[in-house]
Amino acid sequence: MNKKQKIYIGILVVLIIVFLITKMGNNVEKRINFFQVDSTKIKTIEISNIKDTLRLSKQNDMWKIVYPFENDANEYQIKNIFSKVLKVKTSNLPISESESSFDTYKVTNSQGTRIKFIDENKNVLDEAIIGKSSSSKTTPVRRPDKAKIFKLEDNLNYIITANTDYWREKTILEIEENNISKISVICDKYAYELSSSDSLWHYTDNNNTLGVNFNNKTLRDILSTLSKLTVNGFIDNNYEDYKEKLSSPNLEIGIELFDGSTHYLRVAMDKDPKFVLQLDNDKYFLYSVYSDWIEKFTKEAMDFK
Image (cartoon, rainbow, N blue to C red; front, side, top):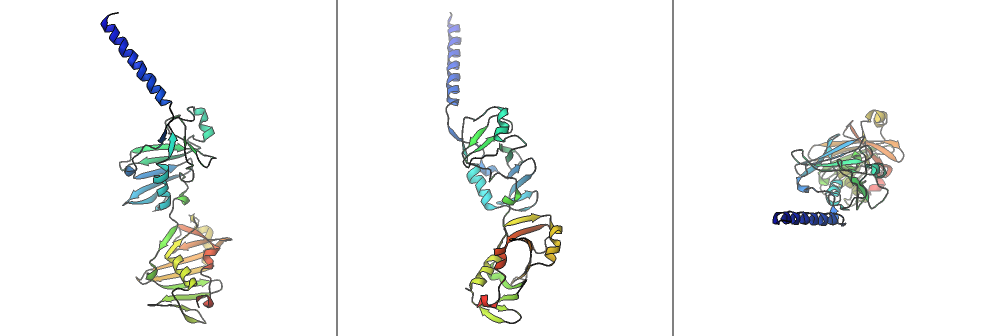
């Protein structure tokens, strides 16, 4: 064996050793971040399943729903994406590498939910198909072009959903409390007005006129509810189904502001204890509130004394 052959054999032995070390290293279990993406580069998040697609976009440092409609995005859900989803851990070793396991873990294109992280140039930074999990602590996942299935160390099904109700901001109206000048209320039994002065509110109905202390509990409940109007749910594109009920509502509330603007709420029974709420005569977006919300306004003079 000449010198040149010995060199070739030596190189081959080194390569074999490197290969074996690498292979052994790959079989050592390690905890890693599943998503490999720089969060500062994310400008769009798309979540989709076989039925629905939700697209969120960062605009002027605020996250908005841009599809299937335009609306403010729920800040809590957005924080969950960045604090929980992007930081979720998994093992570097898959739980399966067989396509026959896709059905078992619900990570097929038709069963799973896909999430994409996209930059400002519309490049996909990372994406995954999230499977359904019966465990409260884990979620199966795979990348769309891979057969390897991994187990995430958290259940992310409640975050990664295309259901728009989870992503919409439930506070639909915010008003500076000291900007409210008058509140007019008409309900089944009562009709009254509340008007603001420098240090006192005034209550008026057909039979009574009285001053209301700013710390009166009923007044405080009404002001806090209207200054940050938060709903329980959303009803879209169903105005015709509620048109008749809303034409004879159970509760009407008019809000006048010192800046000259106004708001109008119309509330009608849906299915007890749920009511449908219409804001400013909008026929596209309607909302759901419950009977305890209505009860804050169905008051009489004695409640303001």
